Length: 194
Image (cartoon, rainbow, N blue to C red; front, side):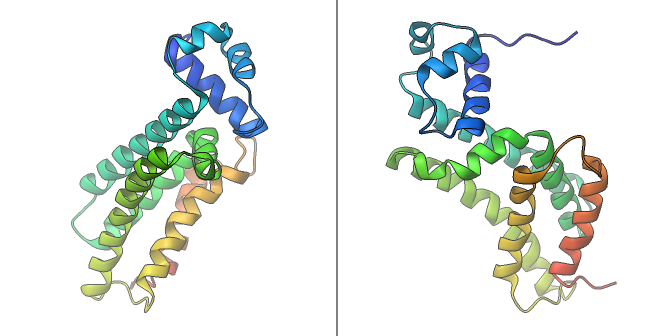
């Protein structure tokens, strides 16, 4: 039996749905209230503004993605190739399982106010640093031959985030199959040795 979400979570879920379909600027508080089966007034008892909802969605998705990928790297072996495989696998699965939130997070960053933008950029920088650390260690120990590690890091991150824009659960590949495929693409991107 599916668990019914209430309060803040139900509102955020409705906001994600509306922001994904209508865009942040095309969504009204009334749209979100309708999606959460609440009144507009009850939404304001949880959130001061639509901007706060957007920031909370982005913080939630980025924080969850960081926790998941950090855990994957920590569970992987000590070698950069093992860590990159675990990192990409987790990154891809996250973007298929949390597709709508990830898409909103990537596409609506332009809609954040300056405070929200600073907060989200700091979280994104933390995620990028995780990728950069793994790739740079691989380059330094000779396991990765890419002459362009900074570009490789950006490409690896984009591989995952772009999945959110086109992946569909009823598509040709399961999330696991896609993650395995993208792990191989990541190894090729960094020119991992045998």
